[in-house]
Amino acid sequence: MTIRPLGLDPTHCLIGGVWRAPASGAGLPLHSPSDGAEICRIARGDHEDIDAAVRAAGSALTGPWGHATAAERGRVLFRIGQMVLEQVEELARLEAMDVGKPLTQARADVLALARYMEFYGGAADKLHGQTIPYLEGYTVYTLRQPHGVTGHIIPWNYPMQIIGRSVGAALAMGNACVLKPAEEACLTALAFGEIARRAGLPDGALNVVPGLGVEAGAALSGHGGVHHISFTGSVGVGKRIQQAAGQNVVPVTLELGGKSPQLVFADADIDAALPFLVNAGIQNAGQTCSASSRILVQRRVYDQVLNGMAARYAALRAGPALDDLDLGPLVSPRQKEIVEGFLAKGADLEIAAQGQIISDAPAGGAYVAPTLFADVPPDHILAREEIFGPVQVVIPFETEEEAIAIANGTDFGLVASVWTESGARQMRLARQLRAGQVFLNNYGAGGGVELPFGGTGLSGHGREKGFEALYGFSVLKTVAALHG
Ligand code: NAP
Ligand code: MG
Image (cartoon, rainbow, N blue to C red; front, top):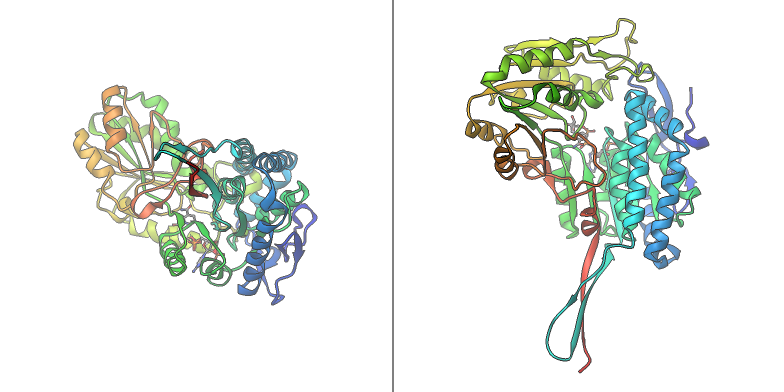
């Protein structure tokens, strides 16, 4: 089988508005995680292609894209969003086949991509500068201007959402983008490049170069012609990106995952909490940076919450992406191996419940049964490290102080949620929890185009999503005029 996203040849890169083979002519196989079969080949772009893409982006900034008004940038983003909506089924199928996510979850990603285009299309002409009172005879004001060429290195778990939030905001501010999708998931990135081209985005404003991280990714993060880098992925690679960008004194936005907790207090509405507690852990088979992998429960309601979660786990089913069950496979055999390694490290723990892999799931698929561990000590490796699979740990606590200490006791700080009917406790914990987002009586794994998002600690720095992202994707200039 060979897949052609929107009729494209997937062995090509989009550079300067033209689809072309990488300079080396090299390719890489792309496998379906649902059954292990090769579904097509993709381009193995390297430093030559990245260099061409960066130069094409630079040219776009001095051409029609660089001269487009904010309203015109917004209009083209709207058109892209509209065309994404016309391709929901095609994009969802591509993502499901490539990444292994169930169709319903893939469709949600397409809709989120369209929403990002609408949100940033609408925002493009709404970020104003300031006038600043200064000395007699002066007028001082600020301008928000694009960085220039922005590099976007994205992972495989939510390609469309991450393209939407980073490329969308960067284009809204007038940057020209070079996108390096993950080698394991680049089909929707290619399709998006084509949609943007068809929607009239000027040549070079968005370039898409698939390839290996150590080749194309490293070339992009170390390129002297790049003025800002946005990265989502692992902590280890994030550190390298920051070092590479440091050589060129270029700002970076890093989103590196987490170990996000949900805190359930005895006064909470447990029935309302249960679906959120479980879904936040198993959505996208747990391969979500903002997944909630730690559930902290006050002792008085511990059995009730654990039993409620266990019942839900027992009903979960994993199978091929196109079967559209609760979970698909993990993205790759390598990711399955990583997650199984963690499960082996939990051999000393009590398994409260597991879901099922359907009996006719293809043997070559990267399936892992969702697993819920009970009574996990907060310092256990399963309670501290990001697993990136459908695994949750339940941890009992007695007091609010203890809950805060456990919640803040990892090196990460991305998302947290608090389940309690006490308004005072909600306000206290919202301040005290170490996280870039705190949800009160809900949990928003991955959702919320409008909501600023990002981490502290090993979860990274900088904010994407929402209006806030526009500040990160632009530079402030102060203009002081002495006119007497
Ligand atoms: P990763 O290696 O950090 O990959 C993320 C992106 O960085 C991919 O596009 C990757 O390219 C690229 N990359 C890899 N090495 C690079 C380098 N030296 N310089 C520049 N770019 C480079 O993540 P992964 O291997 O896919 O997943 C490993 C673990 O990372 C997961 O188990 C999970 O814990 C974490 N992760 C977190 C997130 C998140 O949303 N925060 C997302 C994915 C993974 P290639 O993949 O094409 O090589
Ligand atoms: Mg794939």
